[in-house]
Image (tube, rainbow, N blue to C red):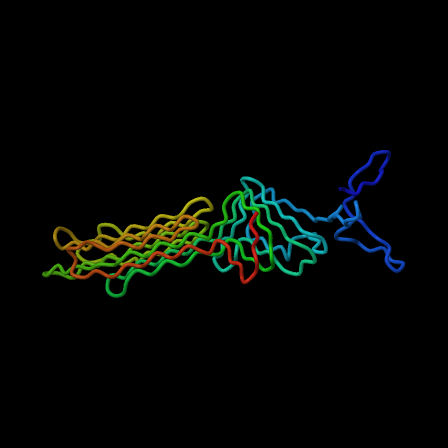
Amino acid sequence: MAIKIKDSGTFKEANEVHIKDGGTWKRTKKVHIKDGGAWKESHRSVWSYTFTSSTNQVDLDTLTGIDKFYDVEITINSGVYIYSNNPSTPAFKTGTGYGGTLKIINNGYIYGAGGTGGTGGSATSGSGGNGATGGTALFVETNITLDNNSSILGGGGGGGGGAGANDDQTLSAHDYAGGGGGGGGQSYGSAGSRNSTCSGSGCISASADGAAGTLTGAGSGGAGAVAGSGSKQASAGSGGAGGTVGNSGSNGNTGSATNDWNGGVGSGGSAGTNIDTNGNTVTNI
C-alpha cells in the first residue's frame, strides 16, 4: 500500500515521508499502518542510481549525491561495463556506512582488471617471467542484496613469458635468442616485455613484446627471437596469451629443442576474484 499525496489535483506517490517528533520534522525510512489489526509496511524510502555508461573503478563511498540514510538501490544497465584498469583496485566497491539496505542490480558487466604479462626469458640465464594475477571485480564492504542478471568476473591472468635459448655454432660465437613477452589479461592487462637479446652469427628475427589486453579481449603473446641457421639455430619461445575475464593466462612457450640451452617458461597468472565478500553477506535474488 503506497502513501499518496494530492498535488495540483492529482494523487502522486510520495518520494519521502517526514514525521514531526518533539517539534522537529524528521525523515523516515519506513512507514507502517495498522490494517485489520496487523501493522503492515506501506512505504519504504529508496535512493536510486543507474549507471548508463561504462565507468572505470566505481566506489559508492565517493558516488556524488548518494544518500545512505535511505535504502540504496544501484542499477547497472544492459551493455554497460563497470571495470578497472588497475589490478590493485577492484572494479566496483560497495562502500560502508549505510543506514538502510544496499541492493545492486547488475544487467551489464563488472570486470576486474587484467593481470600483466610476464617478461621474456634471457638468452643467457633465467627463465620467462610469470604472468600476474587479475584484479577483483566486486569488493563487498557491507551486507548486500545482489540481483545479477549478467556477468561479474575477475580480470584475466597475464600470460607467461617465453623461454630464451642459445646455441653453440662450434666454430663461432653462440647464437643468442631472447624470449617473447606474455600477453596482458582482459580487461586492460599490461603487455609483458620481450627480452631483446638477438645476436651471434646472425639475427634472423628479434623477439617481440606481448600485446596488452583490452576491455573485451585478452592480449596475445609476443614472438621469441631467432638467431643463426641450420641445425645450430637458436629459437626462443613465444610468450603465452593473456586470459579472458574469469580465466587464467597461458604459460609461455619453450624454444627449439635443438638448442644447447633453453630457459624455463613463465607460468600464466591466475584469474582475479569474481566477488570478494570480505566477510560480509551477499544475498542473491
